[in-house]
Image 1 (cartoon, rainbow, N blue to C red):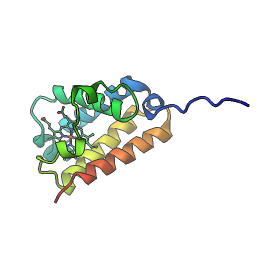
Image 2 (image 1 turned 60 degrees about the horizontal axis):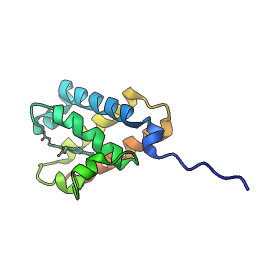
Image 3 (image 1 turned 135 degrees about the horizontal axis):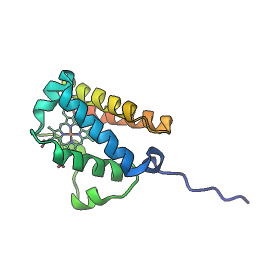
Image 4 (image 1 turned 60 degrees about the vertical axis):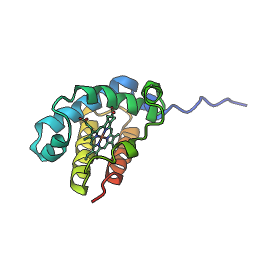
Length: 131
Ligand code: HEM
């Protein structure tokens, strides 16, 4: 009987940490530069460097890659972590649009998993809106 190769994780299909870092950098570059995201940008600290470090770590463990970020933040939940922020439908949509542009710009080779990433992160962001 032929043995099947184990299914690749979303992390591997995306291209690993290098792709996640490139998506994150493009995301914060766009957030910083495009006035369409001004309200979202204003919610963040002036220095985005800690976010550029943190987001790829979260995305890595979340997509089936190395879990260092989760080990460094035991029990941290992305949804509850965002509760203190006054997230509206408008700012959540800015987040989702900005992320989907960043993913499209980086253009991971596996377009199916790239589209899935964009869709799921957009849904998560919109699920954080409380007004
Ligand atoms: C899938 C959706 C999202 C993910 C994966 C995500 C991810 C993250 C991560 C990893 C951090 C840093 C946490 C830390 O290092 O302690 C963070 C912080 C933050 N996020 Fe999100 N986020 C999402 C959606 C949103 C949305 C929709 C908003 C606002 C509309 C938002 C606003 C913020 C703010 C204001 C901070 C703190 C930034 C700072 O201290 O400068 N996030 N987020």
